Image 1 (cartoon, helix red, strand yellow):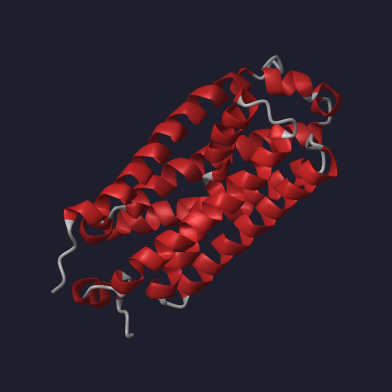
Image 2 (cartoon, rainbow, N blue to C red):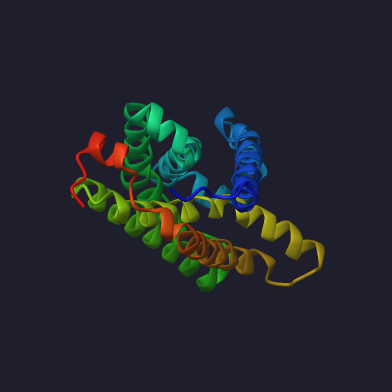
Length: 224
């Protein structure tokens, strides 16, 4: 049996720490939206469309389901959780998939039509929403086919899209600090393109060990 060096786990651990910390910051920054007063800075910017009941409903659906999927996703990267609590792993997985396919991605794509940043900004959010939906759907399709090895890469890609909400803020702060003119639009595209590139690197890094262990294969009834 091949034992991974602890040093090889450090980059992934640091990445998960980054996502956990930024998820906490995003949760804190979105709490003012739930005062329902419409006086949060972002909502003041969207005063013209905030009056629309449909836009307002999609906004709160998107924010709420987005937070749910971000929180549900992080424990899914734990092999200990998968090994010791497979039912919890499945429950969190279904929570993530339903929140993305049923709420976050569709509501986000509707809101993209009204996004700032001109056509480049709107198209960026539409592409992000479509890729988010597609990668999550493929992950669900693979797990329902009991192809657990094929399920993992698609869910990594899906989480990369979910985490664009986190990296967008990081890129925007950095680009704004160095006075890049189209910081907002650039941050939209960088957030999911860079995330997807990192996801592909992570998938390649994990590829040799992605075949399910015998015990897990027996538990889940994997025949390949």
